Image 1 (tube, rainbow, N blue to C red):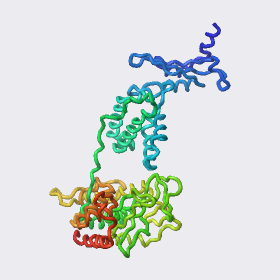
Image 2 (image 1 turned 120 degrees about the vertical axis):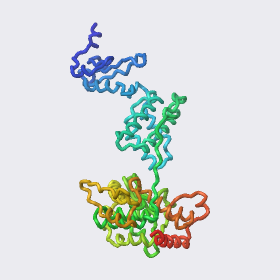
Image 3 (image 1 turned 180 degrees about the vertical axis):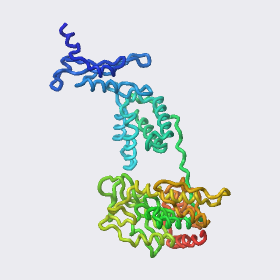
Image 4 (image 1 turned 180 degrees about the horizontal axis):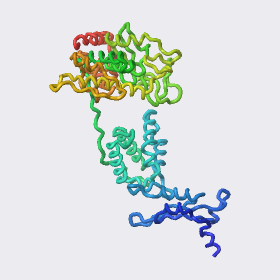
Length: 476
């Protein structure tokens, strides 16, 4: 009788806790010997859950806590979510987190650092909060399909934050690869099917490439210079945009363009460095990676490694030289590791957020000219200029309406910075550069075409530079 008395509650459960309990959920105080210790001399509050799930009585592990609130939190963690899933783990069953830790230590030893960093970021932001605490038996094909459908609906409604379809596609790929290793993780799951295989999802639409035709290059350069004069855009982003348009540089290559890369005497740009995100920086002298991983750092061009750094030389036309020379003559930031053409106040690479803001402003201003002064005047008259608070009027709209040579195509609403490379490639094709030469200038790996030649000869390079300059006279 005395033994039974020890199992009875010695303390009353607070009413506010009792009101939160549901059917099958119990919290009581115990002073049994197994629940009394130096840390808990008065015993523990026991949380217990038993309920009917799919016609079966399910008993969850009974656990003791120091306070009723902690016991209630444990019980709440055992409650099913909106889709009827319980994320708490049954005793002794491995979780998705355990599978992830196994894969990262045993199956990802040969992937690159950037790929590994991307997987870790997607795990931390999108996968772990949803699946990390789930038992492997709870991750079924039906649960995976319901999750994918729900996330896609939130993305389409704009309720998924920064997560878009393209990034969500990578998240799905990571989960598929994770559960492909479940058989190696434990022999118990050798015959387990991958729950993220053969699911229905919305395919990410391919990005629509926009090409700026060469006949509008002159109007664009004129618009950029006037926008700077009127104080409607920052100069560095307009010059960076024109550099990429007239030389085919990638975004990261343009962002870190330095003075020592420009050779005005020979009309050349040496593309031997680029900005990389979540990467280590290279030493200016040894060209080897040093220091810790940075959010953005100076590194080698795309796919470049020490000993094969993917450097290339791009012709600098007379028109591009005239655009770059005024900025080149200005003094750089003293003591900076790299003599950047458009550095931050401290001599470092400009932050990507600042670049995106400046690029968005420039794109918006060019789009104003294209939409408010269309190539062909509408029969109903020119569109009315909208008024935007804090957005000064663009005088180039009136100038373009008077002079058809200053009008721009209506493509700047959908254009992306990388489309400058498409435009440069089309321009080089128009002026008759050989395919091998175009691939070399753009830094592409052309397979059979690249196997035909080793380097672009000096004759071909000078011919390319001459044609780039002379081509300008044809399109203007």
